[in-house]
Image (tube, rainbow, N blue to C red; front, side, top):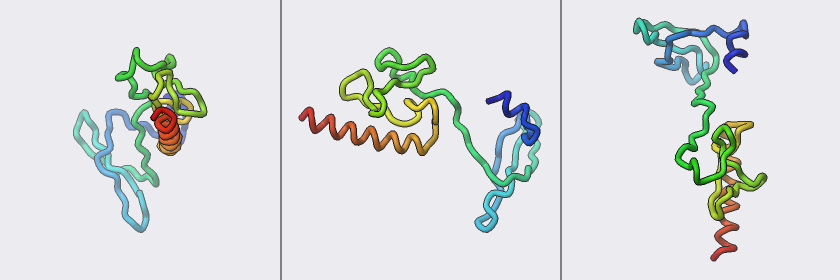
Length: 126
């Protein structure tokens, strides 16, 4: 992903900058972002028409290491299309078991799958 960004002429990389404020209004939506240089503490406004936040590419599954089967990248293995893990009664949903898509909407859909799987499990194991 890094190489694709660096090779794209439409993308300007602002090294050592962090977003300080998203600019815009209800009528126009996002119109810019105020960024702060972490080395000089200077700020500047950059014109943009959208702002997307990414939280990373690593699943937050360390807590389950050695307990639930995971792939080499730390994603929890499930018996697709269900949300069942290798441990009876333990289900996984969302980004922790979706290495291909890793998006909120996938997490919501997988959450629904897990809820149905849990309900069925509980019904079968009164």
